[in-house]
Length: 280
Image (cartoon, rainbow, N blue to C red; front, top):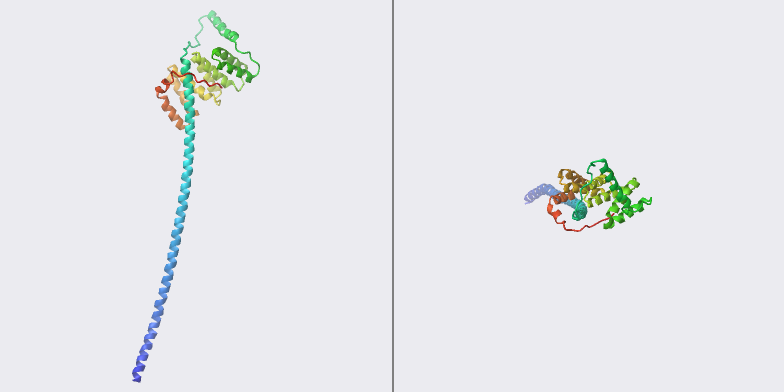
């Protein structure tokens, strides 16, 4: 019996000795694997969170850039609309003036050649007479005063001849005055009123050629083109209107104006309108 007990005790000891290392070995990997997977998961979650944060930042930046682009486009649209409105208003005033002027009848253009010396003398006398008897105010020697006096005559429809004489005297008297482009412009307008389209074109062209930076240059250039159109010379009219649109209009306004000029109905609608004068 004692022998059996020892045998069982020895067997149990061997089993415990073998099982203990295996148990320790089995427990260690469980703890290690569990700890490693949690760290990996935390790291992975951190990476996902960082990626989401970066994506959100990029989306916010892109949204901000898009908003800036929209604001810029809105500003460009507003500027183009303003330019177009200015062009339409200017064109309307020009057409009203031209149609109102043409309704008063036209006189033959000047520049007819002299037939003889007697005719030349008579023409010279006829030309000098209005200057002497026109009632144009005498020049004071002050450019500002004399220019304002000529403008006052423009406002008086019964003294258009006096206004023309006053501006002619002004142009000769004050060749270096800052009012030269305005004076030439009004000489062109007054000549057009009388049906002297060749003379009008000469003065308008003088403004464009000699004073291209003047505020009067755009209107003067456009009116040269209109005069060419009135005379039926479309080939000569086109360079002036094209140059006018390129120099003084933005792309959107140019397209709108080009479409408007192709519609003759726009011109016909203003035939019975009165002159909307603008003196400057």
